[in-house]
Every structure is written in structure tokens, then in C-alpha cells.
Length: 147
Image (cartoon, rainbow, N blue to C red; front, top):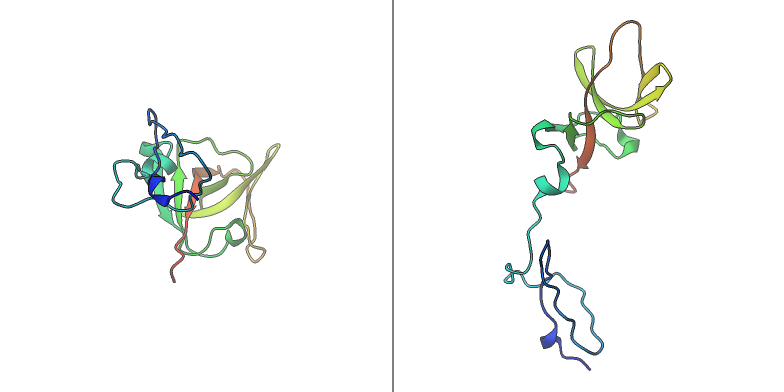
């Protein structure tokens, strides 16, 4: 039987990190390493992990349940990237009648609609000479698991 003393804590991460040679014999690891081993574990920077265009990304909090079935609930935090070109199927934040709304962009030929992901909310048809102003594309939803 192998001793746990020869199993290293932590994991090398990032470019240029040396990968340790695993000990010989049967081994198993099912943990996160010791918090005291900060030198071997790189902390995740959420800005680097979640934001592509830092100068064009904004944080917004949702209100309402129109996008519930898309996994966006009342009070969730959205990362909205204004540098991305909105495409069919993207969840977007659009300016409609002076109000920012979060909906799924639906485009088919010249027809454009903003679809809710909740049957209790009507879709918004775009047209009638009024241009659609897409404020940005939602890239990430952050939700709290605490009440």
C-alpha cells in the first residue's frame, strides 16, 4: 500500500509550470491541495476567465422573469459585451422604448424579434421604421446560491 506522504499537494498551473512525476504504484487524489501551498496553486482571476473585451464589458443585474427558461432569473448578474456582433440566437440586452430589456435575438431574413424565455412574456417584434438598438451580447450569467 502506498503512503499518502509521497502524494504532492497542489497542482502546477499556467504556462511553463513543471509537471511533477507521479509516485510509482497505485495512487489516488480527490482533493484541492493544502491552502498553505499557495506557491504551487495559481488563483483564478475572474476578469481573465470571464471577460474577453474588458473595455467594452459591463455588469448588469436583471429584474423580472422574462428569461427564466434560459437560466436567467430575477436578481442574476449579467456580463454584457458591447464589442461582440449580435447574432441570431444570442441573448442580448436591447433598448426598447427607452428601457433596457434582456431577450434572445431572433433573425430570419429581414424579420427580427426579441424573444422572451418565459411563455408569460410576449416577444417583441422589431420594425415599423424604428431601428433596433442592441446594447450588448450577454456572455455570462452569475447567480447567487444563497437566499
